[in-house]
Amino acid sequence: MSSVHELDFLKEKIQELKDQGVYRKLPVLGTASQAEVILNGNKVINLSSNNYLGFANHPRLKKGAIEAIEKYGAGSGAVRTIIGNMDIHEELESLLAEFKREEAAFLYQSGFNCNAGTIQAVTEAGDIIISDELNHASIIDGTRLSKAARGIYKHSDMDGLEAILKESRDKYKNILIITDGVFSMDGDIAKLPEIVQLAEKYEAMTYVDDAHGSGVLGESGRGTVDHFGLHGRVDFSIGTLSKAIGVVGGYVAGSQTMYEWLSHRARPILFSTSLPPAAVGAIIEAIKMLMESTEYTDRLWENAGYFKEKLGKLGFNTGHSETPITPVIIGEESKTMEFSKKLLDNGVYVSGIVFPTVPKGSGRVRCMVTAAHTKDQLDEAVRVFELVGKEMGIL
Image (cartoon, rainbow, N blue to C red; front, side, top):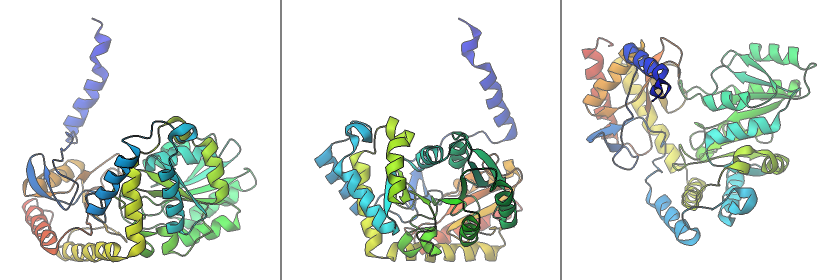
């Protein structure tokens, strides 16, 4: 047998991870995603999921999923352009467009697919994509799939953005500015009003990936565009259906023109089976719940404020978050992973995040407080943070 099948080059890389103290095994969840879970066989408080509103295990969503399965089956059977476009998909798109206060919404199988599919479909050689340096990995990958040139500006640096726009305007046909709405590692919000103003000044299009703004910012979670009142001025507004909405999938909200073009050129739609009926049925229920009431988003913000204030008073560095995302910045990579492990040993799960997800030396545990947490659970989590923080000399 040839030694090539041993994959020695990968074994060496895995050993490097072990030597650096950042090797990990996948944690195993033994319950639904909720505020308290069974993880690796132990009961823990969950501060790691993106289930912002507690929808992932909500009875109304489960009922919506079951009813959709009973009517439409387990899978859609094809890509949307052949015979996988069910009336339930169309119903969800209409509902999303109404919710987002936009002309149209185009449905994808995941938030990652939104960026992989949309960016390359709306740009070509002779265009330029200008991107914030802290944009999500899916934007970076989506941009790589495009034949357009690319420029990167320093995080939320509007002078830097304008400098690239000024230099690019006469050299390129179309300009697309891409930014996250909420930056997932720090929890800060894009300077969207300024970005839109610059885009209009230099006749550029704007594209906002609102994965962590969907269901969180704006009226009842309508997102960053709604939060700033910029309807009709952002060309592509990406939303996820797998974080606050609690299921899976993503969408682009914008114009009817955008919708028509993507239905012909978005590769994940042309070459990958459409969302399963269960997911669509559950998502429809989630959007209806948000359109009925602000109670879930109100509770999310109240819990997040409560937890942040308590951690801040203890003296933890929680960065510059403007959203429920609460990073606790430790710094050194292996120390961050040790902090996360000790929290878990004491019944609180907060995943450690280190390079390459965040820059070297800025390792953190990222606390994701949800609407479903009780004050007692948050108090217990704070107690454990204090205990481990003192034990490790962080406080």
